[in-house]
Image 1: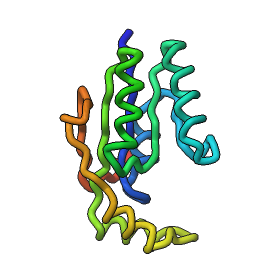
Image 2: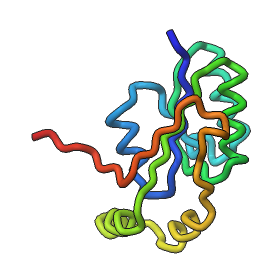
Image 3: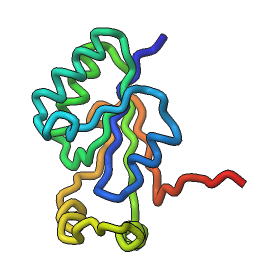
Image 4: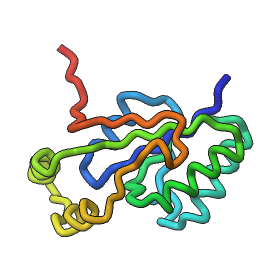
Length: 140
């Protein structure tokens, strides 16, 4: 069995959670589960990899430096590193924001859009998938 380390990348409201729920049965790990303490998150991830568990890690991962920690961890345990970049247009982000009961702060989305460094396979991903304006298919 191949050990997989899936990193879901994208700004707030880009469809990360929806995509994970529709496509993965692996344990879902989020930085917020660890009170936004990246060291605790990485320690937990390492425990799971030591146990031979494939994982999907979900957060914004806006910068190469943050993604590098995850890529290095995957390499340490010979896990296949898969990046999935939720490349979502500002129009769709705005539609999603407006459709929520409690709207996500626009200032945060705009800041994330300015800060995000588009991921590349050269960073160390074995596979890098770009999902442009992902919308979960509806059952007919």
